[in-house]
Amino acid sequence: MNKTLLGIAICAATPFAGAAQADNASESQVAQQIRRAGTQASATGPAEHFSGKVRVDPLFPASGEINASGAYVTFEPGVRSAWHTHPAGQRLVVISGVGLTQEWGKPVQEIRPGDVIVCPPGVKHWHGAAPTSAMTHLAVTGVVDGKSVQWLEKVTDEPASLATPAEQSTSGELTARQRAIPAIAAAMATSNMPRLGTALNQGLDAGLTVSEAKEVLVQLYAYTGFPRSLNALGELMKVVQARQQRGIQDNPGREPGRVIPTGGELLAVGKANQTRISGAPVQGPLFDFAPVINQYLQAHLFGDIFERDNLDWQSRELATVAALAATPGVEPQLRSHMAASMRVGLSAAQLRQLSQVLADQGDADAAKRAGEALDQQLAGTAVQP
Image: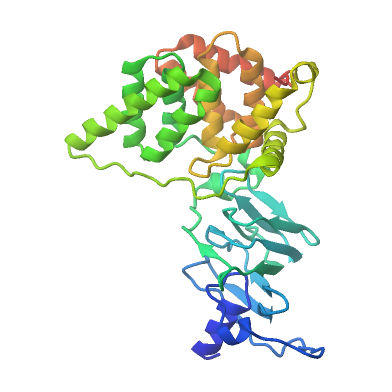
């Protein structure tokens, strides 16, 4: 297949496209047309966007009648796409094999034949084949101003990002970066500025970006209050400035790239996030008594905050659990977030390590509360908030 045809197949007839070719984008038919199976040349997915061999079988390009392209995409076992977004969204239908897909900051999901994956515009995700099975899906992808995809970084090879949800709950250890997050959160929750400064330095040394550190401290205002959040952000600013004066250039990280919805759409997204994290729709006498508090939780905490994609959900739960463990009197919420942590892919062993981080930091009471909450969760006695 020559380079010109390959470019057309990849760019115009697949969901992994740049700008569509002009002649395809303006294509118009006045009569029914049948394109016989096997008459359109296959192409290979570019190495810069995939971790291995991917075959693309084009079906139709975007046109004046249908502003979307379609293709069959076949991944060899273990092969996946890079992270990416679609400006006009995408629909995938699994045709054969077993696949995996993941939205940024959320657990890996297994997908099987007949499953339909609806990816809204701007949602960062990847998809590919399971480790031991090839996977083929039909991809139909919308086009905006001639563009159907925005390619981002490749998926890392860390086990937690590639394991199935079941594998995530039974394997792995916290990375040095992850261990820094509970130390930061607990110090913030207790307003221990010297300890927070030490934890922030250790986190930045371990690979936490400045953006991620800021996000931890911003999110925790919802659990520890604005005054503590503002003071902690001031401490982070001083730490970063002091490190710059010593010649240390920390990774600034990136700002959130996802467009946050508003109004009723934001409430719906927040409710969906809350339900996924909680394991079921959140309800009860407290929310019947004061329903507005759940609206705030859904629209702001699980909507505005949890939709920000510069910090993954596992990191957010590590921060929340540590902050709650450091706060006496909120044991029901701590137990609830222990359960949520396991739902987003943290294992019991990793949560034991969180307790040890708190103990090593000198907060024996927080470590004890975290350990007891985990024991109760594993025994099946955790309660909803």
